[in-house]
Length: 381
Image (cartoon, rainbow, N blue to C red):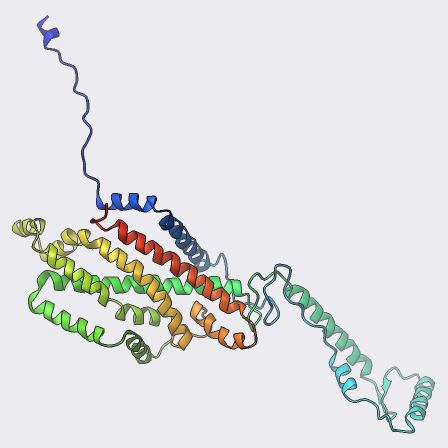
C-alpha cells in the first residue's frame, strides 16, 4: 500500500528553451523576403551555368564557326550564304565583247565551223585558240558551288542571339564569358576577403606598433585612386590571363574588408569571453580565429558578396581596355570590346547579349547582398 502511495507519475519532458542562433534568424528573414529568394534563384542559375560550362557539358564548342558572318538573331535559321557566281563567270562578265568590232560575228561563225569539223571538246576563245581545260575548269566550278551549298546547309541553324564576325554563336560566347567573369569575381573576392580579414584581425587584436604598421600599409593603398592602382599593377605584371586578373583585383580590393574587420576585432578583444579564454591560457591564434572570428564572420561574408559584384564589373572594364583575358579566351569584357566595331556596322546583338547577361547577374547579386546584410544585422529583428 505504501509503495502504491509513494509511486509517482513520470515527469513529462519540458520544452527546451535554447536560444535561436544568428544564422537561423538570418535564414528566417531571408525566407520571408521574396525579392531576396528570387535574386538567389537567379544567382544559382548562373552558378549552374558556370558548372556546366566548366565541365564541358555546354558551350564546349563556343569558338566553332556555326553560321555566316554577322548572322542576325533568328529562331528559324542563320542567314543563308548568298549565291555567288563562279570565278570563271565573274571573269567572263568582267571582260565583255567589243561591241564596235565589225568582224566579231564572222569570227564567231568561223570558230564554230572549225570546232565542228575538228570535233574539239574544249572551247575556243575569241581569237580562235582552243582551250582544252575549259571543260575541266567548268567541272571544278560546279564542284565548288556544290560544296558551298553543302556548307551553307550545315551552317544554317537556329541562332537565338545571332553570330559574331567569325560566325560564332553569341549565345555560346555569352555562356562561356559568364564562366570567365564569374570565376574571376568569386576567386578574386575570396582572395581579397582572406587578405583583409587576416590583416584586420591581427591589427585589431594586437594593436600597438603592429596596428600602426598595418594602418600605414592600408593608407598607401587607399591614397592611390583605385582605377589607377589596378592599371598600374596590370602594367607591371604584363601578362594577360585569368590568374593575372585575379591577382590584380585580389591584391587591390582588400582594404574595405580590412577596415571593417579591424574595427570589430578592437571591440571583441576586450569582451568577457575573450578575457576568459586568455585567463585559461588559450593561444593568440586560437583566440583570433576560433573565438572571435565566428562572431564577425557575417561581416566577411557580406563583404565577399559585395566584392563579387564589384570584381565582375572590374574584370569587364579591364578586358574592355585590353588588360584582361588574352586572345582565345572569351569574357563579357572581351565581347564588349569586340562589339565596338560591330556597333558601327549596325550589328548590335553581341553588345546586347553581354550587357543584359552582366546586368541581370549584377542586379540579382546586389539585391541578394542587401537582403543578406539586413538579415545578418543583429539590430534588425
